[in-house]
Image (tube, rainbow, N blue to C red; front, side, top):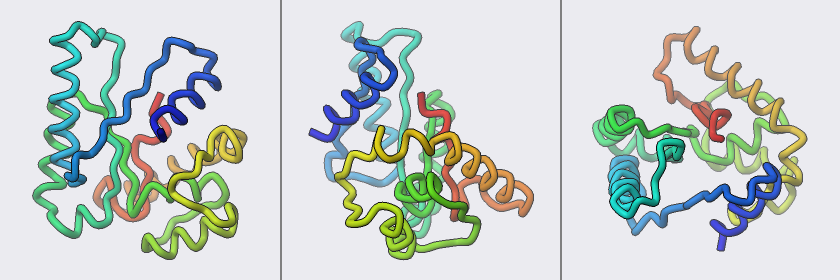
Length: 176
């Protein structure tokens, strides 16, 4: 259901009736390496079935917080595997709600998932993960969010931190 909402919202917004966004179910494995391997398998199946063109892109979207803490080796393995397979990455740390929050405000300090959701609820009362927030209320604020994500990335670089340090919204602005 969420896949259809996302697909419809983006198609409608871009006025592109042929655009197809495929959200792969996680099959009970949500660690980054499993996500990358699942994406590689799906892309290969689509290539084998001639359902993949040169213009198609494969993106992996995942959070950093718990995955980095649980297994840094799995995390780094996933990042390296994605890069070697030309899979684009959109990573949020601590969680995807950070991308929503920076539509409304700057954030440069480390933050927990719970604290982040509390801040988000000040802008989106009764926020729930299943809500569709695009185009309303996020579309008109997306350019500001992109600028804020770029500022976060520059701060990470200036401070010589790991690319996906908390907080970050790496790659989300390029998802197209």
